Length: 416
Image (cartoon, rainbow, N blue to C red; front, side, top):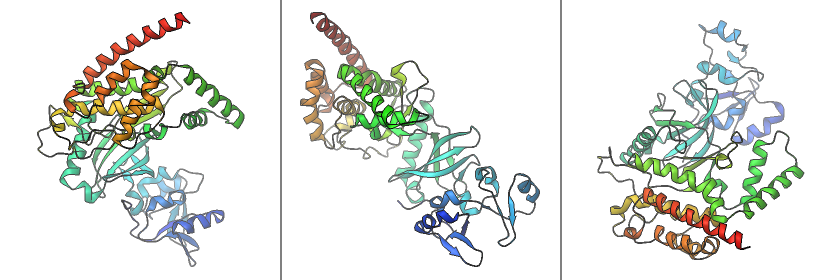
């Protein structure tokens, strides 16, 4: 997807001499007359964000701008914000090209995070709350299509309806961007998704160590990773995955189901994770939030005949084109949770539906035993009518199997 906004005129930059090669590589040009680097017309302003410094020459506010610390540059007739000050504090006087990245005069985009078929996601700073957030901006061409507008509406309605649950992503703000006419929504900034943390436990623990260590060093990092991996290996593989990861994901799905919302596109990339060391409860170390409800079904309010169910992602959902799948949509979240469980228990990431069944009948069965394997064969059945009918039934049956498993493990330890 192309950049959502481009420079419409030359954007002057404050580039230190030692960074001139970096600026040049990004496309900046040298103005020999003004002796300044600039981003030519047709570039993404965010590519040059580290060198933003100049303001519009607003005469009526000159005293206020001067009082805040900006300096007047007569050679180019613009104000410059010294590098010792926060350029965001001067956002109301930014050049027009940069104001494209301000939303509701509150959220300032600082860099792109992800590009998708329908939207761009940016890391942004919330001026009101002094915190980072994520701005999801729908592409203008796609965003005006009927299907994209429907997806935007479904996600917004779902997040509003499900607000307040600890395992659902919060909706901070939403609307239509006044400068572009593009639809957007704002959610809390979540550094990771489950997709980034699947399949490599050593890498996960290294990320955790470096995120929370004020003065990281290699020896302490290796020790932390070694101890963490050994602790995980000493636990029952099912309960290690269920207690910390699968349980909160299922709780989020259950809350949505009770509110008559089906996600229908659950996958690791739609499950956001906030790492926290504030809690004494190890189950709350990974704080999970379900997001990206663009394909959701709201049983109370969905009167549209339009389908967005074709936004399915193999292998995390059953193929909606299979016979009668559309009659059993409440099983799709059940199925997705089952595939995620396979990946978390086995530390292997399936890429196809065939991979799912190889894992199910291979390493997953070896790790969890006959009872759970038998039930997961129902969860992941290719025939929709043979799966658990919804996540409420899934939770009830998993609770029963967990109780039986705890008793069996306790008895086994006594026999040893």
